[in-house]
Image (tube, helix red, strand yellow):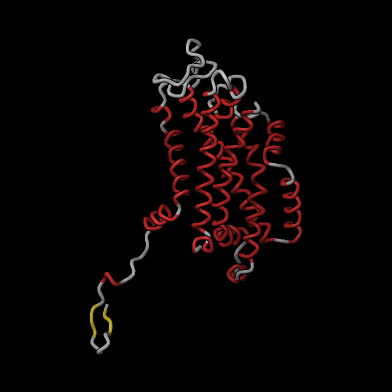
Amino acid sequence: MSVITRNGATGALADDALPRKKTALDAVLNFFRRQPLGTAGLAIMIVMFLAAAFANVLTPFDPEENDFQAMMQAPSWTHLLGTDQMGRDIFSRLVYGARTALLVGFSAAFAGGLIGLVLGVASAYFGGWFDLVFQRILDVLMAFPLIILALAVVSVFGTGVFNVILAITIPLIPRCGRVVRASALAVREIPYVDAARALGFGHTRIVLRHMVPNVVGPFLILLSAFVGQAILAEASLSYLGLGVQEPVPAWGLMLQGGAEEYATTAPWIAIFPGLAIVMAVLGISLFGDALRDAIDPKLRDR
């Protein structure tokens, strides 16, 4: 490439003078540099995923095996985090409990988020009576706190991993649908939606191909928040005895077994599951907040 100098001569423009195109690696490194708390949250999430994926390698004991000769042993080199009232290794149950937390958390968040995304965009696109009925249904569902509505669903369908996922998914749908609808109302007024109608495209194609991709930003932020809420809701239901049932390793069940009765004699039974829940929800929340700052242009510039 040539340029004209002040005296009129032409010269070659060095490649180093051209602005370098930003790559995905640059965006990731910029995220790490500008969002230290978000990076810490991402690191916590990665540790959870690795622990869940390699639980059979990391754990020295079977999480469901009872050893009545080793009940309520304090943390030691044999049992890193001690044992519970049934002689089960707490470290092994914590690592395997990450599988339950991630399975329920991500399944409920993705299911509730995707259903809310499609319904919210469809409500904004069609408007009229469909939007009116849909909004009134959302008002009824959002009148109940997440945990209360989840308790009602579990009481109808029963306990178990699948039913817990269903119980948490239903309350998440209106929370996602309401936010996505607000973003989709602005997208509906953009001329390319009218152009798609003029070209004869069907409603399904317009909603899925032209409107949904333009509300992905708020949806991703909601999704990260929903994962933390779902993990906390699963732990709450399990603690109340209405979630995952024994002998499945779950952090809420571990709290249920030793949070009160053994708080003074064996506090490690409740401390470590409680810390696991706090760190998981905190890590996901920090990453979600940082992701919001990175996606939103106003917050990114600030």
